[in-house]
Every structure is written in structure tokens, then in C-alpha cells.
Amino acid sequence: MPNLSILDHKLLHFDMLAKDQMEHYLSMLSVDISDYTFAANYIWLANVNAFYSVINDTFCLFVLTDGELSMLLPPLGEREQVYDAMLRCFEIMNENNSSHYYSRIDYVHETLLEGFVNYLEEGTLIYHTLEDYLIEKGLVDYVYRAEDLIELRGNAYHTKRNEINKFIKAYPDYQIAILDNKTHADRITFLFDKWVSDRVKYMPKGEVARFLEGIYQEQLAIKRVLKHYGQLNLIGMVLFISGELKGFTVGERVNHDTASIIIEKTDFEVLGCAQFIFKEFCKILKDEYHCQYINVGDDMGFENLKKVKMSYRPAKLIPKYTIYQR
Image (cartoon, rainbow, N blue to C red; front, side):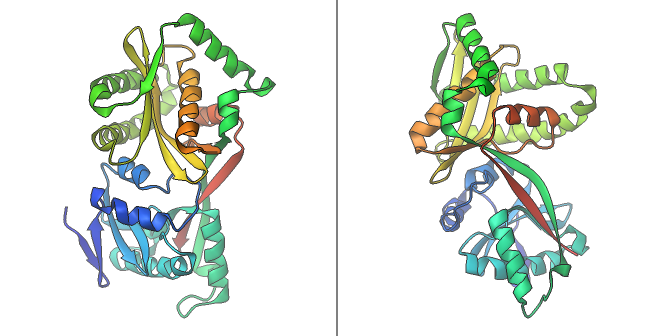
């Protein structure tokens, strides 16, 4: 894929070669949103034209959709560099795009948003008021105390404990293991295909079309997980029942006290399987990363997914914002 050149800035194709550089700039921030890792972006951008550039000593990640340029994250780096870089990035997007309407920065953490607003209110040589921008609150990340998800104490988790106990009683021969991408790849792919079929079968008809739109992207994401599992510093777990793979899940470290779960899939027809693998994987994440919190991402706007994530009693709901230029 060719690189882009806009306003004397060279935008390079976003691939595995960007990993060390992006992680260097990420280390300057302490953000608990699951989108702020190299692996999460590389995995989910498998079918997207993505580019990056270092601008004002910050790492800037762009996506090109139907010829229009936007940003998946705000510039990453030291705070004093980030806000100048945001303004420069809008200039780059506006130079490329057919309209300012398409120029935006997604997944802005509230601390970076607050700093950007304060920066604008102080005035710059280019922009003097916040009237030049529109800020939209988007989806939230669901973040839990690791101990809550592992212990499941109290009445709030009574149903979860029952589901797990029923699973253990029904499938006493279950086995769990750390995911090995070479050994488990074919069985993971088979389970994913079955999961898609089962979800469509039981899903409300009104949600099927929207659900299927994202399946191809998720399929490619899983392929990237399996291909670059070690290089991406991921950790995963698989669940077997009577020798058949019935669940898998993959996660990573986000920052010093937060881990995230990137993907989790279980056999839809094995009752209690999802609750069991979720609890067991949270143990692994806590042991591996010594994390206090576990982020399971957002609900993608699906009401049923929101209900499931709320049922685990999140400790924090972290909003993600989009900045548009008027």
C-alpha cells in the first residue's frame, strides 16, 4: 500500500513496523481506555487503510475511508506536545478531505479532551474559541475491579455464581489452557464460525444486518491475533470440553494497573460457558499483569451487550469523545 504525503508530512502505512514507535509514545500517557494499545488498533484495522506519522513529537494514527481522512486516536505523547499536534492534524485532514465534516478525532480520553479545551480557551495563533469545534460524547468503556470479577461476592453476582456452578456440574471434564496460536488456530476458527451461525439463529431479526456488517472485520481481527500472537504480547486462554474447544479469549495490558479483554467467544449452546471462561480468564490477567482493573471495551451500541456488561457491576464507565471541526 502506498504512503501518503500531505502538507509536507509523510503518512506511512500502519503495520507491524509501527509497533515499537507507537508503544514508545503510548508509554508517555497513562490512559485506561482499551483502544490505547498498538495491538488493539492493529488487530481491528485488518481491513482498513490506516496510516501514521510522527507530528510535533507525537504519534498520529489516521484512517482513510472512501478518500476521506480521520483519526482513530488523538496524537499520542507528552501533553504539552499533544494539543499543538491536534491542530496540525486537523490541518492535514482538511487539506485532504472534500469537507471539514469528515475531519475528526475519535476515542479521545476525557483527560486529553479537558486539556485540549483548556488549551483552546487560552487562545492560539490559529484558533481563539471553542466555537471552531464540536465535541460529541460517544460509547463508554466498561471497567471492573479484577477482584470483583474473580470472587463474584454478594447478591449482585448470585446469578453468575449459579451459572458457573451449573456449568462445572454439567461438564466436570472441562480443561483450560493458555492459548497457543499454532496448536489451537484451526479449532478457534471453527468455533468462531459456529458462534456466528448460532448468534444469527437466536438474534432478533432487527439486529442481524448490523451484526453481519461487523463479522468480516472480526474474522480478520482473529486471523491477525493468531498470526501475530507472540509479537503483539497478547495472552489468551482456551476451554475444552470432552476434548472439543468450546471457548477462547484474548487480552493484554493497557497500563500499569489495567488489563483488557480484546476478544471472547464461547459455544453459544453450552450454558454457563461464557460466565465460566470470563471468570477464569480474569484470574489469568490478574496473575499475569498484577492489574487492579479489567477493561472489557464498549458495547458497540448493542442493547443486549450493554445489559450483559452492566450485569457485572462496572466500577467505572469511561466515556470516549469525538472532536469534529465545524
